[in-house]
Image (cartoon, rainbow, N blue to C red; front, side, top):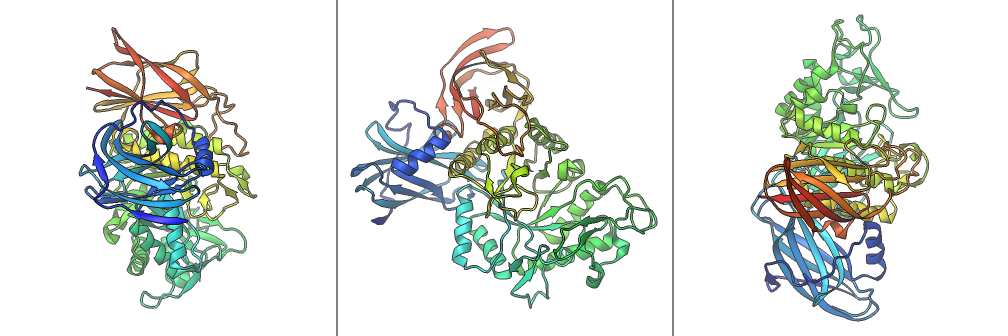
Length: 610
């Protein structure tokens, strides 16, 4: 039996630390929690209606209940709205369910007025001090998406109903994805929309000869907007089909491999696709700029994209010339191309610096945030992610965050199979702990290849549950992960455990950052890992060695410690836990001896200071 219970202003409301402070601390790892909740739990799911909210917006939640306790249930849902370790608000909801009954609770909350803040929402099914079930979600209160971008993708645009489109976006929304790259939605790169603006065909072929339906692209944009997600119009900044002259593109605008414009730079395309190759053009050529900007403007006349997602092909060799034989350093063309496009088109810009090629030039431009597709050839290990995020902060004076495209289990992606949960979770831990976000989730599940429609690898349900927890965590603790923190070189020690500051295999990779009022210690568990390579081409990594009862020694050089807390996506859905610690004043500051209950993949210990 299914029923829907809609709660209005009659919901009991109180402030404070909660009614079950005596509840004994117990940890549930993300994979264990998925099994518990699906098999014999009560709270099936908790999620928000949008990916992002403006200050003072109404945040709507759905709490799906499914009584698998083998008995009738009567209790209270206690809902805590928390910023870090502080309870902002609490709501209580009386519930009763017969055995095996399903019920959906709808709940609303007015977002606080402070901008760019993350919140954890904890939902407990309780009877007195007894907790029967627990599930979390998160809320991002940010007036723009580019402060804390969580970028996803769409790659399939078949003939489908609006209901199917909404279903796909609803699924992505549960991960709080606030921007979507519409990959290969266009017809030809030099002519993204076929026909004329008042007579667009019903469908067309993309570069791989897949069918693309105009109404599906449009419906996806509308559905994304309904969730406060931004829609990104994907295209190369300098690519055109081999027969480009039929569309008015001129060879004089091209990039050449020689000074006599005899060999144009091209990128080969798989056999059987719509063109044999993509010809490369000079981004600094004003006639090419004018041509491609106008083509993109035509796109925006018929499709309400918010962002121009500019792709590149990375390093094009040292011999690149314009038509007149002048040497062209392609990255030096990026800043001008980006800024002119943004001025001409009036939309946001995201720019892919492949293997950070041109990152310095792009960082000078007016991009919404930084975006780098990283490959093991140059960025092979977990520490590469932190280097990339740190470099972005350095180049932008700490103003712009970084999204990293890193394709997991790449070597297994040419045949059906499953993603390796352990390597995926460790890569996300490394990127998120470093202050970045990971382009990985979309309509087909998860990315394993640079050609996004490849969907041979699927996520096991335990990995889906872990990703939900990871993205809740990324939102809830965005202010301690990616909100202007700076590295500090304080000594970090774990008694009896090897640590490293650079992600060495078989260590706990530990580093610290700070912002006003907080110091944050990140611990990524690489114990038992045989190599520091993030991609796991064989999709065969084992889980890192699980540790319990860790002793963390850490020195705070300035400020008085008010409290020490642990938060992890692997423990209790990211709930902040107050840690026991002792202090000792030494010549270099206040030395803390902190008791950490466990470490699975990733822990964040944060110190609240006066």
